[in-house]
Image (cartoon, rainbow, N blue to C red; front, side, top):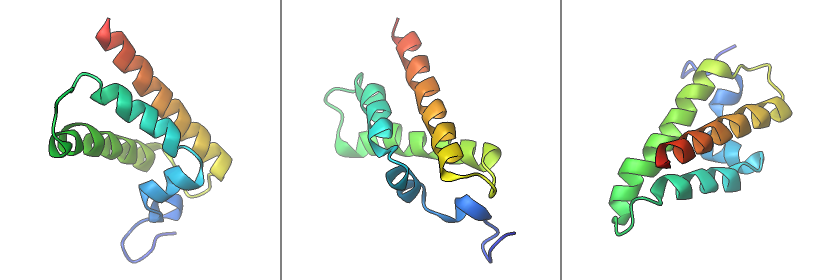
Length: 96
């Protein structure tokens, strides 16, 4: 079932709300800090445009592809957590 904007189920909620409600906001913050660790001296605008927004957009795209309206919050939390961990692992490997 979709709403007037064409969004279904969990995807009707804002990503920031989902992260906060599921307790994944701190986990996401860890990823953002890791991704911004190589950008010492960058301005707030640079961090927003080159780290924060792209990361949130990547997660949103991932959720649109893999999440569905029948998922429980527990399943959604697991999906998000696994995505964040995969991104953290990827960033750590890139640093080596």
